[in-house]
Picture 1 (cartoon, rainbow, N blue to C red):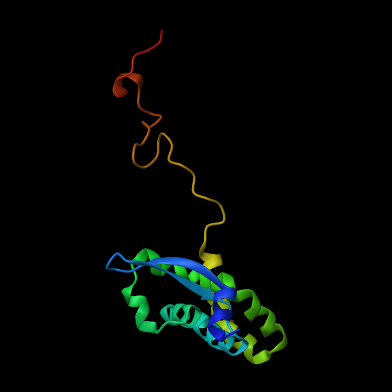
Picture 2: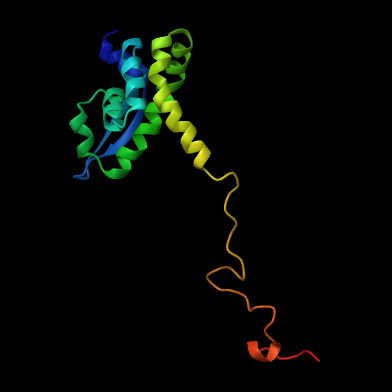
Amino acid sequence: MTPRDNLLVNGQPVEVTYQDGTKETVYVKTLSIRQLSLFTNFLGSRDTPGLVALCVGKPVEWVDTLTDESYCALPPKCTAVNFKRAVAISREDPIAAAELVPFLVKLEAMIKSAPLTPPKPASIGSESSPAPAPSESAAATGSGSST
């Protein structure tokens, strides 16, 4: 089995669309142990295009040829395929653990800034259509009396 065959066996297929409208299936691969070190560096940095390029085995310039939707679908796939292994290795390797810290700090900040409860749907009397003030009489609001 060649390294290319191994990539196809261990990769997750993802169909991407290029800006010119053509489509291709690329494979988000399970990274080698050496590549996982690069993966953890990319997670902690702001270089998501580099992370995607590493995981699909393409030059980083390749990401610029994708549609926005295709590009945005790749980072979660890259993380899903490789993050669990990176964490497992970091449990035994303090250097790998240190590489994950910047990512985990960002992740914690995102979790803390997320609302704890989902927003409630707008109801009658919301800011967009306020209810009449309780002090207003039925005559002032234009509604008749039921008596």
